Amino acid sequence: MLNWDDPLEKITPSAPAKEHFSEMPGVAVDREAEPAVDSVKRLVGGSDLTANIAPIKYQWAWDAYIKSQRNFWLPTEIGMGEDLMALKQLNDNERHTFFTTFATLTTADALHQRNLALAVYERISAPEVGMAIIAQMHQETIHSMSYQHIIESLNFDEDEIYLLYQRVPQIRAKFEYSNRMTRGLQGQTADLKEYVRGLFFYYMIFEGVWFMANFCPIFSMQRRRLMVRTGEQLQYIARDESGHVGFGRALIWALWQEAPETRMEESQAHALMREAMALEADYAQYTVKPMLGYDLELHQRHARYLANRRLQDMGFAPIYPESEVACLPWWEEQIGFRKEKNFFETRVTEYQTGGALSWD
Picture (cartoon, rainbow, N blue to C red):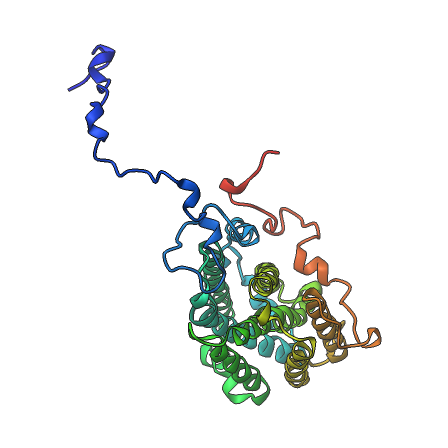
């Protein structure tokens, strides 16, 4: 056994014999003839053997993956006792709007997890892009955990929450439409143009319009000091979803560049958005009841603003005139965590995990 008094040479391994390396595989003489790793990478339809993350070809996807790791959070860190008391203070309109909105978001997040796993990820062949999508799947499971934490904390009936869509035609119509879009995404041999059309629906409409608009009624309550902790959890979820929308935009643009034949016509994008907005209008008519500082007209004008914004993100003209749209003045503040908070009254909302901090 070695001890600290042993001479240094006793614990220094001898150099390996030269012939030890004689059986190593040879290196190709003409390295220039070998294809570069990033040249055989493709978003869709690349080699099944292309498992190399580096060199990174799709930097935007790698950046999205790193950002998702920095934004890790757990819903159980947010105490819900305040909301249990606030729930009793809601009037009938506020209770209906809160419960219906919350139930719809809960079920929609579970549906989106399934879509990412069974449809979007299946066809992606570039490893760094696949990693970013898997990170999104994980974030969606955190969102589902958040909704379940709220359900248990507020003593909601789970069947009432998870099965509300079966009893309300306006909610069910949105989910049935979403399921049809998922079927269009599935299958390695499915039409690639239909795949991109499905990506446009899920990233630009499902997450970019439907999700973002439906956070707003609860954010409005939060700003009035009602259901504050639920609103705080939705802020974290909205931050994640905002990142997903940005990733989806970059993914679709990159696919259009690699496979120009998949590019959507503006008329197709407009038709898809109009169909989705008609479903959203029916849903909002049922869900959003007049509350202090928020009503159906505000909700619909903001949803139209989001629809125009997503279309413009993809290079298309808006479908609603300026007279019919309006961004809620506090929207960017809620979604971007720009407001200052009293450290002793609430938890920090802007943070990064230690391994991701930069000292620049």
